[in-house]
Length: 344
Image (tube, rainbow, N blue to C red):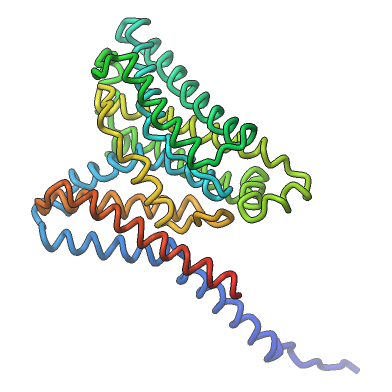
């Protein structure tokens, strides 16, 4: 005699838990910083497209925005790591200039128009940036100089040495192979854009999924707890500042590639723009919170705003005003988020 069994169905509690979990996941996605920042970015693009339909929503302008943001985004990835750990780096713009000058001088000394001088310049640029980053980390971790003061000092020192080396004049000894590379396009986009995208993807994966990234969050959340957990906090911070310097050095070579000159006076606002984009993207000034995805969206908001203001013929001075106020708003939002987390 066979026994018939009724088909098993999930209990109401299980169904309710499944729906609740799905709802929580959707709420988390829709309330995430990159999501609503993406909405703001889309709204800005729509507004500028309506104001200048003949100039803003064009493929050429789209490529221009991507190229503009590429160099800053590379530095912003390094800044995200540093700020997630509760640090700060004001020197990146000056390190970019110094690294670009050293690369240009090296390529001029090697001579020729092939790839050998370009490779030599790239190595020197990255090494120069890394050394400045290590020096920042040494001042902060060993000499116990506050990060704000240490990087403010190296900001002036790096730019001053670059000007001493060049007598304040831009260096234009750039090989033809580097100039040709600057106009190369892969799949319709400049090569610099793809390099920047690769750095952002690798940086985002490293911060989110590696032990190094987890240690960065722990150090930024509670440095003392990180020490008790066996993390060498000083060594980790030294690595983070070295990473920031390395990426600033790489950005120096990218800038040299794009403009075929060192543009010594053209990077005074880089640190401000990068910090604005990183904070706007959800990275906390107090450490422990932040993602490279949010940073990327934040950098695009700043780039689209600058580009849109230029397209609608707003005076360049208003761009600085807008960036300044955006930074204030971003810090205010960060303070509110931190207060809610503390109350929760």
